[in-house]
Image (tube, rainbow, N blue to C red; front, top):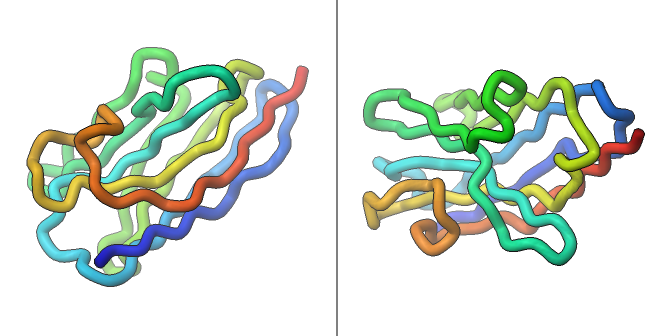
Length: 125
């Protein structure tokens, strides 16, 4: 069993930055990827960014490319999402998730098996 715990959500003004952290515990060996999803009120959950462990490759949804980065500290079993130039449309609950064994990736909610409880990001004008 894997437990994922997010932190770092906050309220910021447009143009500001936040760094979200996700700490994994439990079964953390050889998972395919860890990623971040977000869900705004009335919208579907979408994949925002992902880190693939095999080759260190990364995925970003088009709307955050150039503004968000994702990194991993393997020694601490943590994944970080650095969010810069935040905009009101980035307001959402952000969830950490992991694809432990399917190999299908961390860009689609149905592909992941483990979820954190979420951390709220609010961006105001």
